[in-house]
View (cartoon, rainbow, N blue to C red):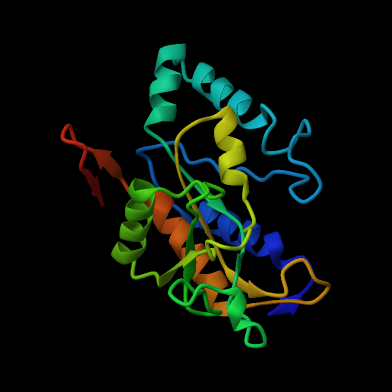
Length: 214
């Protein structure tokens, strides 16, 4: 699929479809879409605003929850931040790390960065990959070249206001931010199915720090 603004409307579409198709009575599923990512997330409706925590606190209050219960619920939550990823470009393969490349139509990209520009850590990556494995959803891993500056996503920005475990994922694409971006149609389906599986999964932390995902 080729068009403008695949970043990040492709992910918005996949999240919304997965959210609407999911059925889970065990938890409160939330899908959040923010304005102004490319021009400044520190606006009143951006990812760095209090819009998300304000909404979560009002939900907690409407359900009769206390402030302590809200903080415990937040600590036990998992954020999946969706933003498209750079696929290896056939004309410029040197821009990608040889061992951490993303390709079109090869599944959801799980993104990691040593400089913490992505919110993915070992725990959140393991949980999301387990969700995908359980649902037979294809995924791939991506990491920026360590000697090149990489992009950032909304995950870390949202965590400034509402801290929780988070994982950065997305769809691989070419020519990001151009007038003619190119992405994979199969990846859109994978994202829809992966997000639906995430919303429907039960993730339980054990006392010894291990987790169960089912």
